[in-house]
Structures are given as C-alpha cells and as structure tokens.
Amino acid sequence: METLTLQRNYSKGIRLWHWSTFLVVTLLLATVLAGKFFLNSYTNGFLIKDRLAKQGVAVNMGEAFSVSDAIGKPIWQLHTVLGYFLAGLFVFRIVIEVFQPKKQTLASRFRKAWRERKGQKRGSWQVFLVPAIYSLFYLLLTAIVASGCWLAFTRTASADAVHAVKEFHQQCFFVLLVFLFVHLAGVIRAERRQHKNLVSAMIHGGELPVAKEKERSPNRRADVC
Image 1 (cartoon, one colour):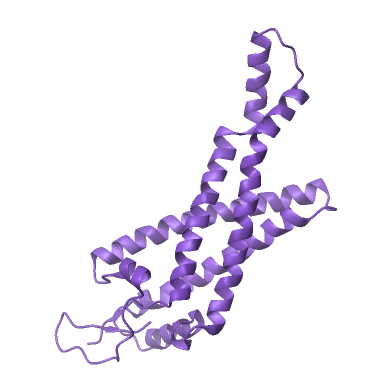
Image 2 (tube, helix red, strand yellow):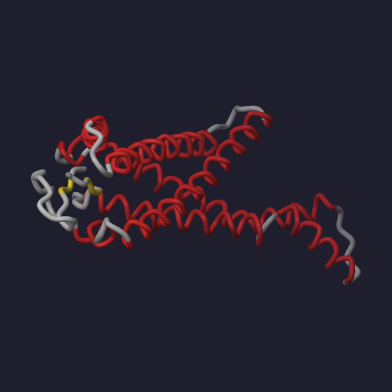
C-alpha cells in the first residue's frame, strides 16, 4: 500500500520568505508585548501621576497620559515599520506563487493533495490538510496586512471606525500567533514521527520530489506534495 508524506522540497524564494516572515512576526510580537504590558499608556499614566504626587508634583490625568503616550509611542512606531515589512513580504509571496516552479505552488499542491485524498491513500488526509491550513493562514495574513495598512494610512475615518478596525487587526494578529504555535507543534510532531527533515529542508531546500512508486517494504514511501 502506498503511503503519502509531506512536501520536503522548497524553492529559494519560499525559504527566504518563510524565515523573513518568521523574523518579522517575532519582532512584531515583541513590540505588541512591550506596548501592551510594559509601555501601556493607560497603566503608566496612573503610575506617573502617583509617583509625581509622592514627590509633591501635582498633574492631572490628561497630562499624565500625555507623558505615558510619549514614552510608548516609539515602540508603536517600530510596530508600524515592521508592519510595512510584513506587507512587503506578503506581496513577495504573491510574486513567488506566480513565478516559482508550478509543482511547488500552493494551488498545485492543493489540487494534487485533493486528488490523492479522493484515492483514499494512507496519509492522504494529512497531506491534504497542510495546504488547506496554509490557505487559511494566507487569508489571515491578508486581513492583517489590509487592516494594518488601513490604520497606517487613513486620515479621515471616524474614531469609531478606527477603533473597530484596530480591534479586528488585533484579534487577527492573536489568531496568527495561535496558528504559529500550532504550526510549530505540528512540525515538531511530524519530525518525531514519519515526516523527517522538514525543518532542514526549509533551510537547505530539500530534495526534489521523487516519482510515486509502489511500496515494496514498510519503510519505503513516496513524497507527493
């Protein structure tokens, strides 16, 4: 019986995009954590007012919040700059999809996995699930980039609209983080089981797909997508 395994060959463009996106998203997460928990303007505003009051300096909450906003502003400016890089990587991924070898495109892998799933071959559901999940990831990335660019460039929207888009942007980013943790756990699980060298393949490119063949022993598999 033929057993299917996950793709283990990646173009240079995909590898560059993958690790660049990983770095940018990690830095974005760092800015969010810093801005939300260490440089939070609301929390720090009360702290500033309280500390100044103990030193005999009286300020109102508006002045305290103004100071705390100024302290936290650089981290959110960095967040915006990193967002531009993420948007650029998103466009780069689209270019890769258009120009990379046809067999390595997401659309081609999705179609091939669907055909294998219909064949009811062992491992076909897992092989099909990977490009399906990646498709959802790209939709999520589209929402994050689009909402982030809207927040960065809009100047005439109402405060309610800005608040709604900001909330949507934040929720999408948190969902993206959940995806990344699930993705990492899935890769570790696959590496420890039947799908070896997935991480190293994303570094050095992996091997070219081999032709499908009938399994002659329990340890032989054919790579398909």
